[in-house]
Image 1 (tube, rainbow, N blue to C red):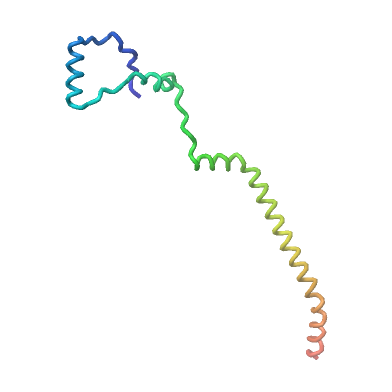
Image 2: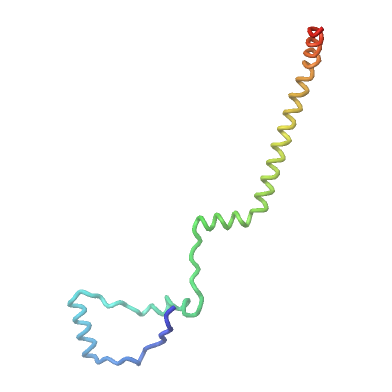
Length: 115
């Protein structure tokens, strides 16, 4: 960071003639003199150590929200997995009960043909 310059008002002296000649030369060359009247207001937060907070990007917002809600997201995922496992187990139990009816007949046929 550059060294702080401070207020230079009254430290540099220019005659009115010098200022008018410089102004005329710049005007003839088509160069506009910048207006530094508002610079102090714009730089005040930085000078006082209060940096401007940049707006949050969409990616930063998404990441922040995901981190803030991570426990709730994990709990929801866990509940969804439990539901899927229970549904799968229920489906298997139903299929097993349906096949038990036919299993006795199949075993009887195999026992009869085996002798």
